[in-house]
Length: 207
Image (tube, rainbow, N blue to C red; front, side, top):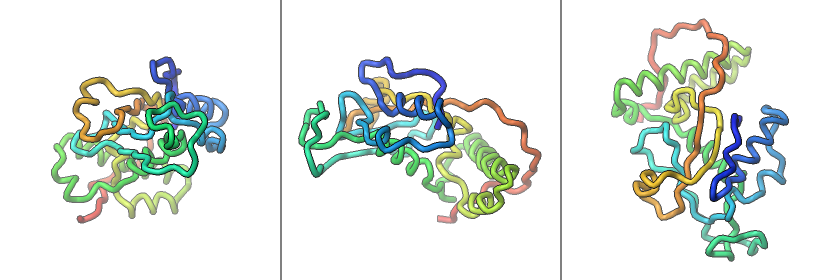
């Protein structure tokens, strides 16, 4: 995920934001190095996180990360429980990715408002067609077979901006006991339109 502005000047600095920024400016297609991914995701380091993504429907639970055991006490930890290793940049980014790749089932899809259904269907086919237009036919076929996913509910807001402490309203509404943070996303610059028409709706799992 890219980053289009510096969002690290908060009371609790987020290494997720800073490292994503550095990584994207070097080469948006490369992966973060091990030294980047191993850094604590937040400063001070935290061992319990509830992560919200504002663009997603509120009935989906937040991403919940809990550290219950740690092989060795980290020297850089400043969390209340210093015997546990704080979550790293890599762990947070991987958790966000896994969360967004979860399928939206047919049952879930039918319970969504019609406007959101249309947003998801449009994002799904745009994701499919962008890959197909790039000549990656096998990947496009995998997308078609796997169906709609939570990432499609982002309505194109797929560019990473920041990882910051959540506003009080989101924090108070969190069902978890972890410190509440949120992912800030924006829509990337519009690409050239893809000329594919789809008469059918989105593909989703039946259960």
